Image (cartoon, rainbow, N blue to C red; front, side, top):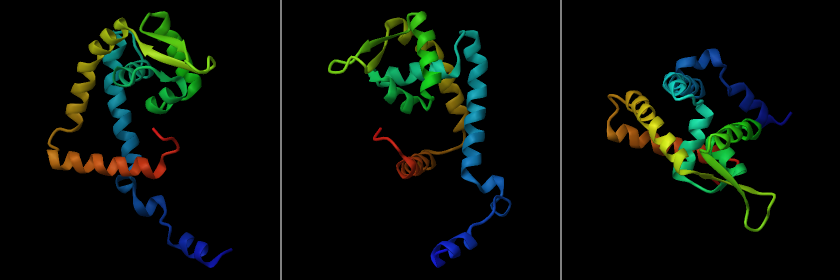
Length: 160
C-alpha cells in the first residue's frame, strides 16, 4: 500500500472519536428528518406526500424541467419520482410533455391547479423553516448558505 494512503488511513478518526453531535452528515439528516416529519402531519390533511410537495415546490420555481433534472432538484430517485408524477398528473397538478428536439425526453410543467396546491402547502413549509432558524441571525444564516453551497459543489455529480 502506498505510504501516503497508509498515513491518511492512520489519521482517519472513528465516528466514536468524532461523536454524533460533531458529525455534520448526522446532524443534517436529523434536521431534515425533523423538518419532513413536521411537514408530513400538515400535508396529510391536504392528502399530499413529502415527495409530491417537494416536486410542486421545485416546479413552482423551475417549471418545464426534464424528469432527470427534476429528480436531481427534488432529491428523489427516478422510480419514486415517476410514481409521484403519475399521482400528481392524475390529480391535474402537473403535466408531462415530450421534449422539443427529443420525444423520449419528457418535460414536467406545473398546472394552475398545481400552483394553487403548492400555495396551500407553502405556509406550513415556511413555518417549519422559520422554526428551524429561530434565534439564528442573518450573518449566521448567510454563512450557513455559503458553507452548504461549497459542500454541494464538493460532492455535486450534476451541473444543476
